[in-house]
Length: 114
Image (cartoon, rainbow, N blue to C red):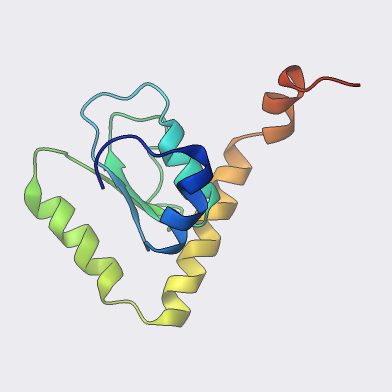
């Protein structure tokens, strides 16, 4: 998928896809990566993101975005998994990002008490 996605459409997009792929050549944070991992989607991205330990945590792959073979191999890896194996990786992806980000501390400054 190319282009921007409306926030209300994210859950539909994630429910219709298995893997989040963003082989960015330069990314300082990767909001879409955090969203995908939070949705339990293993992520294929570059080494130019702060989430460089995806493979060690069985949550995705950090690849060289210029190496089509690395991208292809990562996609083929997920395509060959059975449902049980893939379900474990989905849980790993969600647990991985939850261990890295304290969502409450991020959102608290933006919430108002009425």
